[in-house]
Length: 316
Image (cartoon, rainbow, N blue to C red; front, side, top):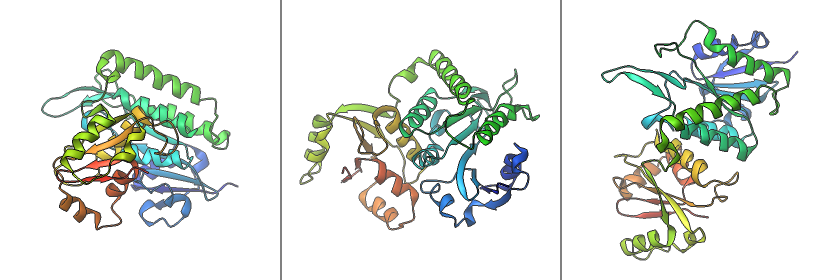
């Protein structure tokens, strides 16, 4: 008999996931924060998902669940944990509403940002692993459905993974990709600007941009970055060093605009992070904590970090 372990960030999510399939009825429920198993730890390198499923002590699936539509400023908030799963060749399910009502002073219906769906598809293709966005459906008033029927398609996906021993090529994936493609096309029709560069990103000629940096930071050797003709500059408006949503957005831009292979070296363009409100002193203070995942992510996936008074060259 197969032995399952469900590692969770919140206990109620573990119980919800356990109820998705009778195969998990006897699964052991364990908190992610206390995990010591290498199979779990390898999926926590960048961030922690809501659920990590182990079958016979092998990681076979990771999942993230949210009631928020990934749009606006928070679109990249969870992307780093998805990238980690892709790099580790573990299928990932992102269960969220593609359309739902945003409540508050300016209440309105919000649609998923098309760039997220496209980035997930590219991530899946580059790493040859299923990376799935599954819709949490809403009613005619754009309120989330919570009667249990919202989980039906997700249950079917999980069941197909179980039947095919969590292999990547399962029949229902075709339907998952079809829905993702349809929703991407709908989002693009509704917001044609999604086909252009995001507002916080711009494409520059590497040589010209580095000439301006050389004039500002005399003595810095930027020549290694010239191997790529063009670069993407991501303008990060944070006032202090933090992760959300910037580290995830950085990775969305990477896979959406530059990435061609499994490693950061395999890019068509440089990824340059511009942080005009972060000084070198502020950056160095944050960097003294070797366990900070935001610093690790910025430096692992950027070719250069431009601060208010210095430039850090990372390109390898």
